[in-house]
Image 1 (cartoon, rainbow, N blue to C red):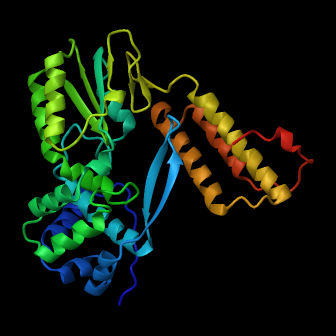
Image 2 (image 1 turned 90 degrees about the vertical axis):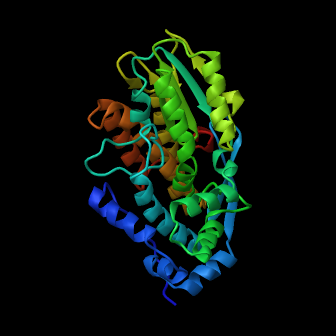
Image 3 (image 1 turned 180 degrees about the vertical axis):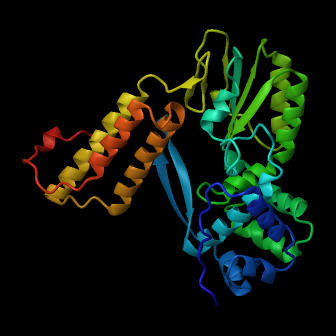
Length: 355
């Protein structure tokens, strides 16, 4: 049995490379074909399918509630990385214009990210934001099965069944799987197409970044239009999170995927940069104290803290640009915080910021 190994990460591949990957995957027939493409064997796939294991934990969300994370164990996660690799290529040639989240971009494409998602709505004074409630968990095992069946008519039943089983957990998409994002996009292709068609007829601009749906227009968006959009969403098997529905009128600062819409573009919310600087300084203090007093903070926790801060810096960089003085300062602060401190004066525990 071959050992499972993840596919090599690809950064901005060519359209030709994606076309080849999509063709390879769509032409599969048997479980042996699938296993060979994933650089393993059918027995290994069957073993992973029969015993899917997840590490389940929670992380805090911005609103103070907790987000459930379902992290696949190594062998299963490797299979899901392969599946994501090929499904991204398949989705690339079908992705609707309004979709900006969870999709790969070619080297000649404009990046589909949160910033460009928000920029689509610059100049439209009326903005409606809808959030899909519990998006991944609402994509059921039946929806996943139907998606694979429709997308890959050459696949034998055993392949469809295996892919459906390894992709789902507790009969829906898990939050934490490498393949859940692209599968969710494939599962709502019809919904995106129907909403896009309706919005074009109604002179409404539509974009979707994962579970964040944004609609904007030059004129007010009527209640009838909003009801129609809700109907399309619910008929697709999804739910609107009514607590997060927002409607902005002219003069109000619409917040789209964490960015403030301005007359000429997008900007970071007030307080974002000062708060981020404070969090980076806390990281530096934690590392200094751990180095001096050997507090035993786990490597994994420290790694997650660094990744979170790096993600926030990258988000700010997308909004402000890599040459911004503020971004250069953030990178320098983070670099300083990462440095191992060998010698410093004794610190009082009372001076350590609360984490």
